Image (cartoon, rainbow, N blue to C red; front, side):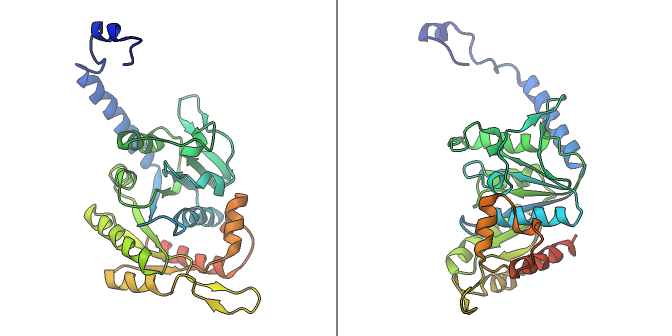
Length: 290
């Protein structure tokens, strides 16, 4: 409760939530029931995570969702990266989310099989910083499940910020049946952090589908010589040492940068490149485990 003055605050009857423990418990039960009802309509939930930023996790999330949708699967993409949401830009979303008659957020329909929700689609100013503590972020993630009209889905892809903090933990607690896909780049700096992500998955008992190695190599457009910008083979070695599935390597492709900036994921386009062929292998390796 915010008071107009100190005098009014002194005369006030205290916090309005005091003594309303039963009401809070009832609201919590309603939210929990709404979460269960929403998740019951979604067959598979895939949580894309990474140990550090800058490894292309959101790009992998966007292209994974686009690839599944292109294959005919009803797919949702949920961006819960509160402080650095990228999905709206990568999918070309510019408008705010609408609200249905029953007061549920309506995901943005990218195409016939793909719908998206991002925290950025709730902001009037896309450049506005979101300065939230843990409880606010936890509440938003739960609402993105309970208060969004996802409908019937084959897949829900969840893109969370890097690390092992509030957002990833809330995703696991809210969607306990989610399956993890860990994204890394080949160099040791990234691999050191991905081992923390693997430890996180084991600690919270998140079943992991495997590791994706992004930006694994670059082919010079002039001489076709292969260049390992961020070393090579680190993802496969880490997967083997940790007893995890290695889902595949993705080459560094400047067209991925362009597709992200233009709001059209590479995997939704009708172009066959080294990247799309490699990504198809990763999707196949995921699907065969489900």
